[in-house]
Amino acid sequence: MRISVPMRSFPADRMIIFSDAVMAVAITLLVLDLKLPEGVTDAQLPSVLQGSLHAFGVYALSFIVIGLLWMGHHEQFSYIRRVDGVMLWLNLFFLMTIGLIPFVTSLLSDHGTALATSLYAGTLVMTSLLSAAMWWYACRNPELAGDVTRSVRREGLLNVLLTGAVFALSILIANTWSATAAQWSWLLLIPAGRVPAWLEK
Image 1 (spheres, helix red, strand yellow):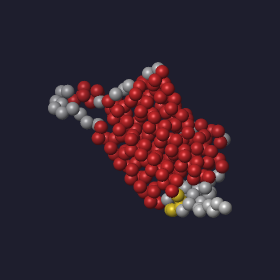
Image 2 (cartoon, rainbow, N blue to C red):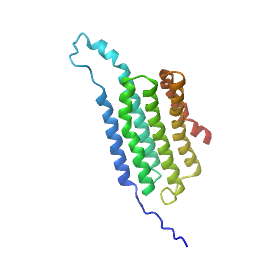
Image 3 (cartoon, rainbow, N blue to C red):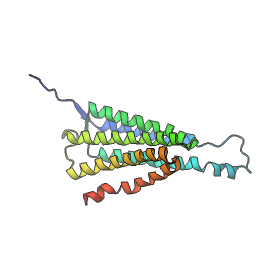
Image 4 (cartoon, rainbow, N blue to C red):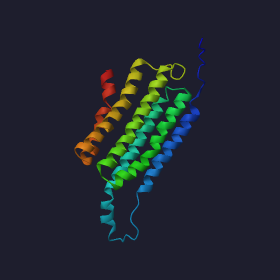
């Protein structure tokens, strides 16, 4: 006869503090990629700054992306009160993808190619899937997130899955059409963010 041993759970506080710290470091590292060439004269400064607009745009994009991921994580853990071993591992892998964002941001800033675009988008596909996995797993366990209504569960899961779908679509566009078109397709995140609430209505 099999005896099932319940998995130990812990308050989520320490994991949330650790996650906030990792995301804060990742969002701070983004600015390290913004630097001007040495020896720029006053006369050259306007043209050099103009040439750096793409780097500033990619920085702003990733700053907003990490900020949105932090807000999503914060919202999830307003419902998730406790964590177990599985949640700790899922969150650790989630943070690993967050830690990659400064690297893929630097790639995208320096190389506007399909490969760089795909690596950036692929990182965020994995981030979205791990966020969805955490939410799905926690909502299945009443001890971790017991007071989540069915509509909130659906909306939370659909929101992160649609985000991942937009970035996955951009990988296809980058490799079949162009990297620029793929990057413009990320604007679909704006209407995608409204779809879950619209469906619930």
